[in-house]
Image 1 (cartoon, rainbow, N blue to C red):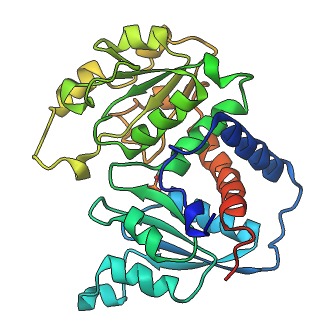
Image 2 (cartoon, protein in one colour; image 1 turned 90 degrees about the vertical axis):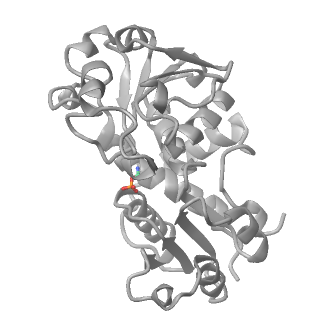
Amino acid sequence: MSNSGRSVLDLKSFSKNQIVELFKQAKACEESSRREVKKFQSTVALIFFEPSTRTRISFETACVRAGYYPILFDCGQGTSLIKGESEADTILNIAAMEPSGLIIRASEHLDLQDLSKKISMPMISAGWGISGHPTQALLDAYTVWLERAELANERVLFVGDIAHSRVAASNFELWKTLGAQVAICGPEVFLPQPDERIQQFTELNEALQWASIVVSLRVQLERHHEKCLFAKEDYLKYFTITEERLKNLSSQALILHPGPVNLGVDLSQEAIKDSRIRILKQVTHGVYLREALVEQVFGECHT
Ligand code: CP
């Protein structure tokens, strides 16, 4: 396989065995007492054309732990983008500096599949338009896997702005491969095209009674091309996860959110304190999941 053939732009090619092997490697990274900075063996370029807190700093930390010095291109400040250079040419020029790999966050306007064929090193998506956010989905499932024996037994419910969520898109791919049941609940304008493999709930309390895992998703205002798709007061009335509604959820269930949380909209101030919430645990586990993935994808392919 060519180096660029190892790229991770979606999760379609991952088998259940590969996912579980990645989780085991991430757990080994997590259990390792190694906390010192490894001697850098090479560089990895982090190219972020969109803002990020968790993913960018998580990947930077993961690269350092794995022994790759992270070279950062952060939203184009002070770069030749302001002179009119395209995002595609920016990527090709950074690739010409021969890092071991590229980690890219970009909008759907950039064709990462096409670009991955033009460069010699692998690429990992750090969130690409609304098409996917594969490492977020992997770290979500890894967080569950650390507490559960068999992921195929889970009933995973997505609540919120599902149609505009790249996190949901990658999670659907992943949980189907893992054999779990998947369901969605949200205002009609936030729901994707019907899919016979995805159950739809119109009533949140009923959905919470069904679920063993709840993934709350942020209302993606920046991806709504019309002014307001759904009135905030209606969202609060029917879809905000509140302490009262959480009484319908099993005591053994887990509640995830990829962040950033719209506090008071996605989850109420009281609900976010619930003992089943794993939001900051996701962030912690994400570093080790990404460390394992960086080792797998960029290892033994130094230019
Ligand atoms: N979950 C996530 O992608 O967060 P950031 O946008 O802060 O990276």
